[in-house]
Amino acid sequence: MNHVSPSGTEPTRAEHAERTATYLRAGEERARGLGNRGPVRFGADGSLHPGILKAYWKHGFYVFQGVVGETELEELRHDADMMIERAPMHPGADLDRHGRTALGRDHAREPYTLVRPLSDLWGGTDKLNGRHPHQMVQPQPDADAPEYVVFLMYGMCQTMPAALRVYGHPHLLAVAEAINGADFVPYNDAIFVKQAGVGGSVAWHQDGVTHWESPDWDEGIHGFNFQLQLYPTTPGNCLWVVPGTHKQGRIDIRQRVAENGGDEKLPDAVPLVCESGDVTIVNRQMLHGSFANSSRDKRISITMGFHRRRSVLGQRGKLN
Image (tube, rainbow, N blue to C red; front, side, top):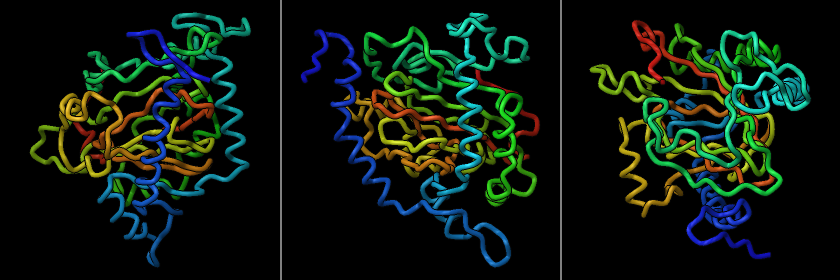
């Protein structure tokens, strides 16, 4: 079947999936060739295996395979599905789609970010300190798509007991100590939801905003994020990163996209393709993002951030 969008408009969901297919396959081949994936391993002294540390600092990310087993994954999926089902119908609504009071109406922080299907919430705006300067392609959703979809969920340690346990996984804490020191600080959590055929994009960006001009700047000063994958990820729905960019300081993202002919499909980016139960670790200075999920595969990623203690002392949140 041909999927032709009207002249001058964004592609349809099906067109977007077709047009990106070759790029997605090539990216996966690049990712598989890096050799920075495997189980969490430790040396004879109990410290993280030096080969893992070397690969992480070289590329800026690593894929830990098989960290969480199926029993725990089922608990996490159940809790995540509960949160999705209890989301408000639209931003500011008090009821979910079943007519019940939406989850979190009494929480200190709104536990949901909702977006239009296949949209880019932050790209090309001043939101979050303007760190997403280029807007991604926003395909036209299918006619039966909902008005809003869940994009991010917060407060997992309050609403998901299984997620709180994962945050304290001993192997992940050992990795955090190896990278950020024994006085590491857990500082953030969120759940990214990329529902099949409607999940929004995250424009290319670097997470760090506090220490770019620091006299003590180095490639690890902004910490890292873990992401536990509740389902297998694919090039069409997963996070993409540009290896080695954690070493380059603040990147002119507009220029990088312009040098690629204005195309968001950066030629040196790779997808973090995973199996369920895998955990990725990504340096927060990495150039990274994700495309609109025009695929038929959903992704739910539990994200947990860690900093060096000295990087948070005296700092205040700077995302607006």
